[in-house]
Length: 289
Image (cartoon, rainbow, N blue to C red; front, top):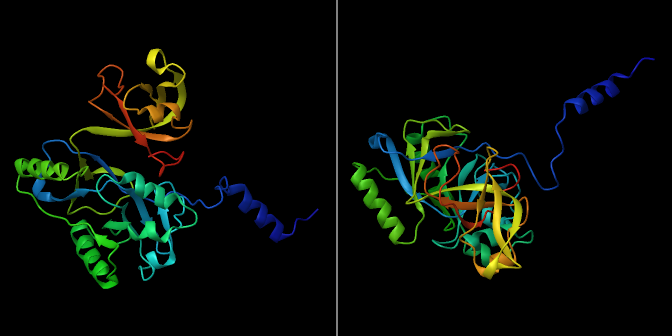
């Protein structure tokens, strides 16, 4: 029996199709990710900016997405007049207001009043073919041309040496900031984690997925005692501190992602030392960090 050409082509396309994404989700955007700063990098090669404690946002030229590929239901006025070229940035309310940013972008019916408090702090142009030196200059022109108070280019500066970098970090932390980001001026935008983009904080942090709730004992009897979590690389360990009483009564659900702080890694096991819970990363999905 001869199969019609149209039927054959349809079956061939279906055989190569990937698993459908859930409704409202898209493939994760191709983001450039930061490594941790270490002493010895040639600081003259880098631009330095504040690391804003918000939700990573990616404007693909038509819509706003989270780093996991979920569409953000921004009000139409928020993105009106934005370019058809991608913008990479942070959806941010203010220092210490991470939860407010997450609450705003999670709403499927956008709250205009909440969005009026939100800013899109743009730090890169992913589709621009030039090095960051050129992308930064082009971004300044784009943001100036759009001229919206909620769309801001992240200020980039140069520092003379490590002492100046540490002074800048202390000043940012003293004002309630999270840390610093370093962009290598000669680097192209690459959707990978690399040393062209670095983060510097007064502590180390990372994300892990919740895989188990372990019951508490003593004063924590009947509520959460410890979270068992798994790193993106498959390493399992436990978080037993950093929780409020309310968080122990209503712990992060299984499968959710949380941020934790730690002080280096155990040399033999690779497990984070003195790991303690910080918060739920509601802007992340099962695709990982």
